[in-house]
Length: 390
Image (cartoon, rainbow, N blue to C red):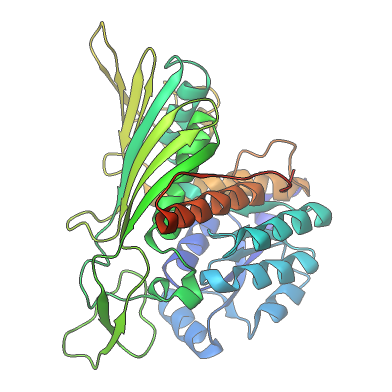
């Protein structure tokens, strides 16, 4: 088995998320030896500003480098499919940002291709790796809450509130049909499935476009960047979802309700959930990530601090700091990549990976496609998993 320090990674994409991947890899001791940007010029400028490693001219050049063990894909959604295939064909282990592809047909093909290649494959649903998300999931799946009946919550942001807010995620040709649901709603839906251990089997969705026309610069805009009114702006009508309200039915009978929004003023990255069981409940808020609330009927409620000495035995190994030392968003990448690279170091995926795989990415696409169809047809839509990857 190799040591992390002996492994080498490359990263496709040098925006906000690509840099987050690089920082997390450096923290666990993996050398990032190369990056690819949307253009070599943009990548070189970003590399100089952010102290990034060597810039490769193309995806093919990065994938062809025999020294690289793993490639991380943090590029726009519409190129994930072809880039993942190129990396798999080169025999690389792959970590891909969500969504794995823009259609479930593509993601099913990638699941099969990864299985055939025998390589480690992961989709970056990194929010699973907040320690208290892991703890809540362990409690729900281990029966600590009784029978899981209801899961509710939301994922709210405000970075696309103004009509001058812009990013490639607003362009359907680059991001796909859905926007808020695909971008952040998919994270929440994955959390619900992961924590309860139940698949989403039916959805009823209402999608909302609250900013019908946006004004933006002609060139690319970095994620979370702001646009000045003084810029030369182009007007463009919008069709993708700013927000969504989704009702859920789960495989073991649980019900769910989630609100998703990228136009909620004051909410920078607000993730909430509550899992209601027949005996107890558990709830969590990402802006206070070290605290888990456990609810009871006949005795006082509890506040549980994130602390490896208090956590479920399956959770403690993923906690990086002692209790009282807050772990937040960047730490989720570190914890997830540590789990991924444990399999990379051994040379192949384990029988039951601790991290989300391409199969999880495929399942997320099946659910979000059902969300889009439900909104169009204004009715409940069942998720058809028959004939998909096994």
